[in-house]
Image 1 (tube, helix red, strand yellow):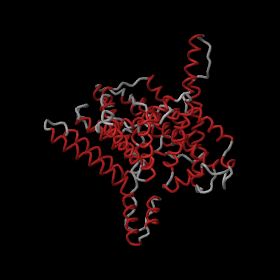
Image 2 (cartoon, rainbow, N blue to C red; image 1 turned 180 degrees about the vertical axis):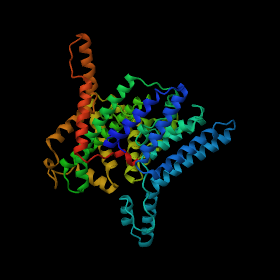
Image 3 (cartoon, helix red, strand yellow; image 1 turned 135 degrees about the horizontal axis):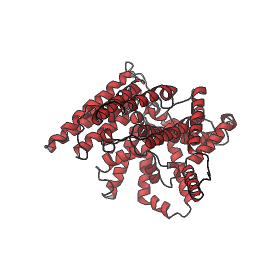
Image 4 (tube, rainbow, N blue to C red; image 1 turned 120 degrees about the vertical axis):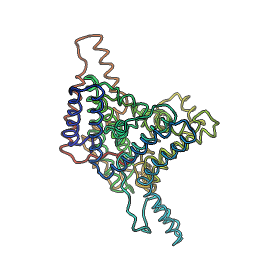
Amino acid sequence: MLFSSMLFLWVFLPIVIAGYYLIHFLPISKENKILFKNSFLLLGSLIFYGSGGFAYLGCLFFVILVDFGAGFLVCGENEKKNRVFLTLAIISNLGLLFVFKYLNLVVRIIENLILFIQTGKFGEAFSNMLAMERTGSFSAYRDIVLPIGISFYIFQAISYVVDVYRKKVPVQKSIFNFALYVSFFPQLIAGPIVQYGDINEQLTERKESVPLFSQGITRFIFGLAKKVIIANTMGEIADKIWDNGVTGIGAYVAWLGAICYTLQIYYDFSGYSDMAIGLGKMFGFEFKENFNYPYISLSVQEFWRRWHISLSSWFRDYVYIPLGGSRVSKGKLYRNIFIVFLLTGVWHGANFTFITWGLGYAVLLILERMFLGDLLKKNPVKPVNWIYTMFITIIGWIIFRSTGITQAFTYIGQLFSKGDGMTPLVSLLSMRSVIILILGCILATPVYPWILSLAKKKEAEKPGKPYLISETVIQYAFLLICIVLLISETYNPFIYFQF
């Protein structure tokens, strides 16, 4: 069930909100109200997840049961036993993730190795492997369908077990509260990845309020507008370009597709994160920010401090720092960066494109640590830094978007070809898409918060004289536009469901 679907907006969400706040008026103790509210949210979250395929609730229940039990096993007095149980819990989680997310890739690799051994055709086998093609050696094997959000909720569960082992958080003694932490529907299928230490107190001590609920509505609507108005429009253009084949599309069309996808993935994912944060506020939860205008970055390092912050924080806390972080020799520091971004690429999917994408960023980040970062800091012409960062980002998204390495490098080659190619540029654009393209570029910078703060400053200087249309009017105008678009159009994908 998508946040941007009519079923969610007009059926699921109103029922959950109404049921949740009706519990507040029951003549029961505060402790029982929290118990009832959490149980109601848990039930709603399971229905929400089950709507995408009830068969995959088994994976979710497995993770909940394993990690809830592991929490009790890793906090004993015997450090050796604690470490053994921690290792077993992590292996169980990653083993489940491997089967559902990476087994298909392993089968393709083995099938093409068999092809090479049988025929000696290395080029064909290697090309098939990079393109993620099967040869049929294991004809009885059927590709496993990836459960939605499995990477997100498994990482959350691992963070709980590790933090209990480290004595950073207490053991959660209520399986219902732990299940709610893992499966809470606002962040279940697409993040942000919420570490247990950030939410454990909120499970029992949160306070709902009208101002917080109002903030949640505002944040949700702006996230919905990002997704429906900008991301969907940019996505339609990008899909047309990629789906028609990338050979011979020409430089103009190639750049248009790359820029549209760059905007689509940002507004798609940051919009969904905004909606998740807004939904959390409606129920009294506070989630950390997941994006901070990444496309204004002046270096690759800065980009990764601003992009998918919850994932970067997870790898920092549970991989980078345990490996020694930056407080090691330069050689080990570069090794740590390499490992983290290899894993970042692998986390995103079982395809050589994601591995290449992650390794590319690893190399660039190591180069910036070695010497390039100092050159960027000393460079007085900052727009050059921005052009460098955005060029790298766009090339990265082309690799990320492509179905295989061959397609990725074919597309990159088209960026430096001539003209429109086989598809005229004007055939892909309408007046609406041009306006939204420009709007998307502008709003990817902090210009809107700057205008709001300037207007509030002017209003403070001259009370009673409004300088902008009310933000409430703007948000409900966005909501109306989103509803019209959702009713009238069928294109409404979500990129990060595949992770």
